[in-house]
Image 1 (cartoon, rainbow, N blue to C red):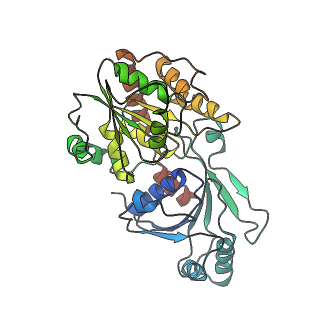
Image 2 (cartoon, rainbow, N blue to C red):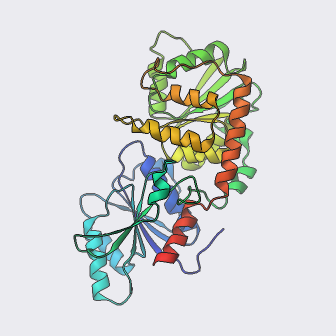
Image 3 (cartoon, helix red, strand yellow):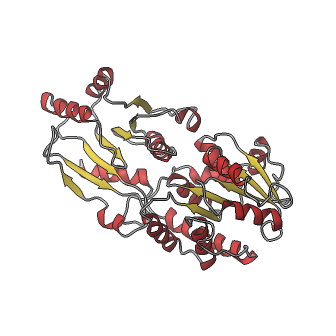
Length: 381
């Protein structure tokens, strides 16, 4: 495992907007940096999800509350161990009293000769702007840190961006994964993968869900029964709501299992265990890529429709064949009748698997996000 000879103090700020994707990404990043010998403080306004997302915590990561204002005791800890790197995740704007404290420390002591490197970690996108804007500086014009520089850091899918979150031991963990044991431990009867096609479902509330469940109940996937493993939360609510529709399912070729809240480790295992993965948001799409299985992405819907451009850019990056594009557009359509969709063909899954395997290999060749951050910090501090 990669270790740092001279560990730095990283302070990551996160505000939980909804759906826990933001805290999920920040926790993975914090834990990954800590695994490489870095010291991390994660400031979050709602860390309750970490109780099930990361129940064991992580050595080297300190989780601190960030409400209206930081507590005096926490500011004292900042003075005792000033940050080398400050990250505001997804433009959340670092707590102003934290910035002021860093400025006071810099002015009152010669413990540090430079200001902390200040990074704005942006949202993930395959759109061209991610490459154009990655690593650009912005001079801070106002406030106690006027004159400091903030850098924009874009994760992404090319070598011209900051890359994707990927732990150094990911390949070894996947090689050691016992699929059958994990499935049996979670009550999945078709653990040998022969009796049914295993499909994971982690989604919002797609209008196309009821029709797809009906299709699976009637004919399965390529005439093979479907065992659907539904994630806790909105995905479970969506499936239960779809049960109120005229289409009947839950019998015939479809069986449904409702999963409890899963830790990030078990969520990875779920994706590795299934034959097809339906995922949503930013963190899980990266995990689906690393799982190397055919997947369908439910992108976070936005009222102005800009998510459609983001989805198409992602499909272009992926090199998705027409059948996979068709299913993505159907799955992400604002109403069930907005996009046509035909039943899956055996050749579809073969083409999708080839697409995902190729994309995974290309992306694995890029520098991962933590390595990119550490390299960027080394060059710019």
